[in-house]
Length: 203
Image (cartoon, rainbow, N blue to C red):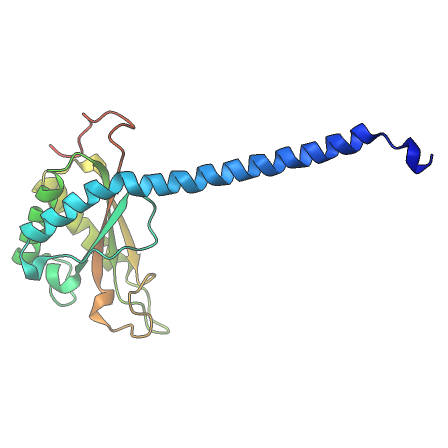
């Protein structure tokens, strides 16, 4: 068989198949990127309303920080320091800490655009040869979740608790930095058109 015997339709079909595969990949990438961008946009207004309400509704000393992190679209992270809630090295809430959490939960309950709270307890990373403080971090997170559900008006099955111990320090270079001791509350929003808006996370 010489070059003149090559079927041109086979070569054309091969080129066409490659073009279709490239097009499918391109469209899929656009959908993924577009979906992620749209998720961020559609939750932005709800998150901003909650942000403003928290900043105006809590005292300056009780105000949690709200620093964006590598969280999924529709998630808003609030960080309470250990000193704001528990005092030095404690697992029992101070009266001021409890009051701040109750007010925070009640502010959240005025919004109908979130569906779940994830409460994470964090402690300082352990020194070499020392155990991590899993129980302490879990106990602090549980204390916060209990206030949310017992006094803040949040339904228990809309709250999750995790003890992260020293696995995610804010300041890795300085394990003793007080900022490492904290409780983070991740507020997970939903698009109100995605489901049943009557399923409120609060009483």
